[in-house]
Length: 148
Image (tube, rainbow, N blue to C red):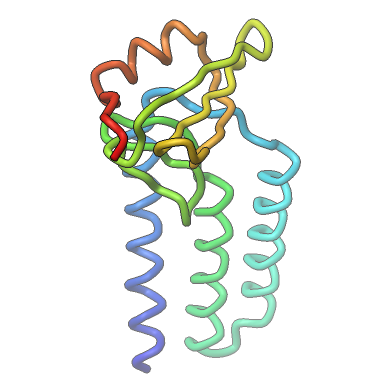
């Protein structure tokens, strides 16, 4: 019974965090649609299997949790927010971590952004924006610092 409560709490937190994250993105990154489709397919398969095999509450809640997790991964959107960079679910960084940036135009709508801490490349992300727009957005958020 306790694990069911944990599944419900984690599912609600995942849904809430995913919704919050989607609304905080200011400049969105390019996504790999193939990988995103795989996550959606996994969620659909898990939902179907849960529906067919849920003979008790434990199986039902476990299946719902796994389905919600797959959907949260599929709906995760990398990019730049007002306060930091969302690269992946495990790499969310504040702008204070960076000392300089470099932008490189890939094509008309895609720009590669490289963010450094000292001489170390920390984040490389492809954004759906122009270099000028990205640099303007980051100019007030990343301030060059003197190296020690």
